[in-house]
Image (cartoon, rainbow, N blue to C red; front, side):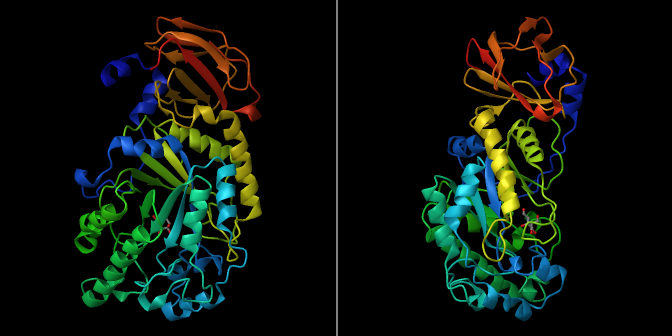
Length: 433
Ligand code: FHN
């Protein structure tokens, strides 16, 4: 089928198929099918398309991003003093959940612990009790966050970074083998706490499996033993969707960063994670936010190639998501209110994307064509399509003339103002795809 499709593709569509900008972080991870979820248990996750990533922790206080301890070579004892100031008086997990829902997001992933070692929950396994319940905050933020996600009907995701900069054994695991073993013991103990103490966890998002910031997560699997780790996880959370950053391949692939997404449909489940504020994942005084239109186009380009978008926000030290970011998310939510039927619950196709021009997704007897740009030509020609089309219309209202010709489908698209793009066209089929 793929070859036949290739013959009938037009120039720019064929060009799109030949190159892809997607780079998967877990590509070299250890394969083990027995730990993977059945596709039917992945369907809910694939239907959601859009989630909120939250990077929050002590690093919000200096407000220079989540790598501040490492970038500025702050000694662990010095950095630990931040915990005495970390008393976020406006922390409100229900508000975070409301903001995510209003943005049209369907799941959340919170950094329960990042590379700096500070745990946002009551963690007996935490080395030196470096956790939010045993320091100034005296709060279990993970307990409140998971409850708020569930109450809002959002998927409950937890991010966990096994690596911990406080351990010399992280940087020289062979020279400081005993210390590295302590870090590994913390990693297993904390993963078990997160998987066993907070009810059903829908997504486990590992990060930082690599050792000494070198190589890939898979290169460190001799140390972390990801199959053993995830066998333990599956004991507590048999249906959790697990990402590929523990060194095991996980249930989906991961593309990270703000680069544009081009190229053909990707058949395996995948997710693109990126920052609303391009300066850093954690809270940063330097602001360089994405615009609503950039986020919407990213969502179309990723979902049109079969992926989900996990968009990150970094709340401040008081727990508040910057109001300017909330406004951007509200605008994305308004677009999804009007156009979400062309995104949620769909699968990519039947037309291969044409980079920068359109993406298509389908669900039941509908095909949704997201037009990213339109040069005002009279007709838009889509590739040959083996279904009869009953009607076509703009989601915003108004029938579109079309005809199924020998080489494809000709749609008469009215000129739409530049600021109205992307525009969504619905094709109703005579029979389900
Ligand atoms: O080092 C981290 C980084 O701080 C951030 O958490 C991202 C999010 O995907 N992951 C790592 C970089 O790949």
